[in-house]
Length: 370
Ligand code: FAD
Ligand code: UDP
Image 1 (tube, protein in one colour):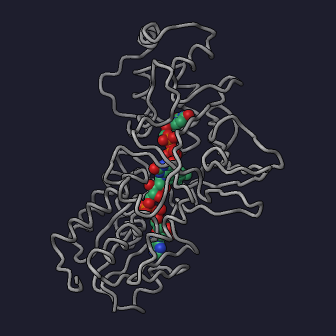
Image 2 (spheres, helix red, strand yellow; image 1 turned 135 degrees about the horizontal axis):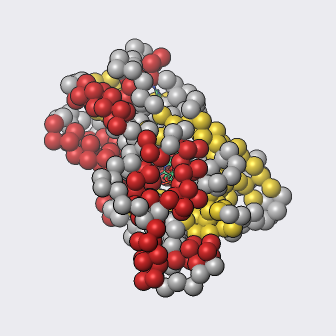
């Protein structure tokens, strides 16, 4: 008999399993249908001996010291600030759009102040900024929107930015200075020995048992447990009773080249050309030295593993119904990107898991606590 069954060994499930086991002495069974821990953050060494991310590039960044300190119990860190270039009009320029991007693309020599006016002269007035198109055209105008955002977003999401909530493209700011970092969070690091090692250390506790290649739907009758943490898709848990929540998927094409480097930065985005959205070269992220280099091309698809909740008004309405049902389902906690249908980064999922643990502490007596 386990105190808890945790479905999913990604950030949401692993953080909670560790807390329940180490802080309360509870016995925890973690299951994942995949053959590995780590969820979408899983990394591994490929046949050439290069550390790659199986499900696309994962860069850790946060403003939360609480989240950073928590994870620091299970990993050392490698300082890393992420930089991205986009191929636009056959030229590689920094994304987010900054002073250097505009001066390079348009052959100008503007100052930051002049660039503010330059944007203002092109921005289209939008009364109510609601969609992912509104966010960009109201800040930088239609031409830059079409060069940097429209094509990429259509590829990535399979819908026009005008149909997506503003929060999607609002993830990528516009700058008038020369800051070419993708993120501005105060803490930006990669786990020094990789994500998988960090997860292994988190789950390495005598009270935690991990079963991989195990689907919840097939094992739930086999083991006794008192309470459940579910981190898979919430619509799947409820048998799709309100219909399916759409998730966007990706097909990853992994390649190894017999050359030391392929591109100047870790990620190059392709907003205007190709079927793939971006190409990642891992050695920039990991700091690994190797005579070869490994890349991943991301091809967005409608079918496949659920990676991205799709933020539209219709999907938000549907999710709210599942959320109401989840709230009335006793002894089950829904946590993580899929179970709460939120476009969350890793640090946000860790924060959500730690907050869930505090709620559990306040409501569930710790029977095994020493
Ligand atoms: P997941 O990692 O999806 O884990 C859920 C686990 O549950 C999975 O392993 C799944 O197999 C398992 N599962 C589901 N249903 C069942 C079932 N019925 N039975 C058994 N097991 C089940 N975040 C960042 O902060 N920085 C980044 O750079 C970044 N890049 C990303 C790039 C890509 C391509 C993607 C897709 C995401 C990226 N993210 C990034 C987001 C990050 O992956 C997530 O925030 C985080 O991994 C979510 O953790 P989770 O535990 O909620 O879900
Ligand atoms: N985006 C874009 N062009 C870019 C980069 C991002 O149009 O060069 C849009 C696109 O819709 C993307 C969203 O902004 O899905 C969020 O980008 P982010 O890099 O945060 O995506 P993630 O890393 O989560 O896939």
